Amino acid sequence: MGKISIWQRLLSYFKEIHIESAPSELNPHLYVSLSKGRYMLSTAKAVYSHADLYTNFGKVFDQVKFDQLPGQHCLILGLGLASIPILLEKRKQDLTYVAIEKDPNVIYLASKYALPLIHSPLHIYEGDALTLVQSQDDQSFDLICMDIFVDDVIPKSFRQASFVRQLARLARSKGLIIINVLKDKEGEKPINAQFREVLETHFPKGKVIEVGPNTMFVSDERFLKG
Image (cartoon, rainbow, N blue to C red):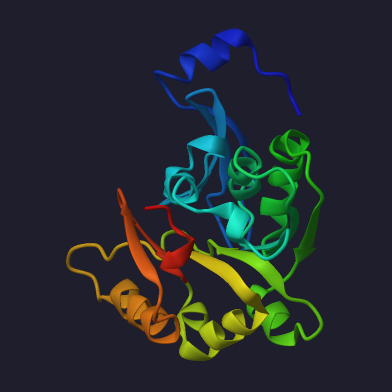
């Protein structure tokens, strides 16, 4: 990982600084930049990660009572630059992580710019989360965080009731699932609203949390403070 000077970090609070591009078949405009002193992973239409400034998950994590989790095993669907474990380490230090990421270039960039910042055990599987979730029979998780996008769209296969049932099956009894749903943009088909309806059907104790341009779904509101 190339060394970032103090001047670059200071300048990044005023202007985004491009660091490296790594276009892939899945993400033709994938790149890392420095913004507000942190590495940020972006595509043409979306920000995939921004260290501890990835506020959609950060603000939800601030509301979670992590001491109620039944154990320490966390599954991450969609790695990005590992913002989720970076954020969680600030709130709960005893978690171990399994991350599934389809794009090898995302894994490359995460390994270069983010993984050195993480102290907890983290195992990364390269592959399709849909296939790996469906094939998982012998493992369950206490916390599942889903952040799967191609640019700013959740692929259709991950918005289906069949996938949500599989995801619920992977969650340990009394475990928690947190999903980045996004909001529908004006003039677009309400695909994210429909996904919310699927989630609310399968998790009747769930809660929707609006965080800026994001809609986050928490599978059980009993994990939330006050």
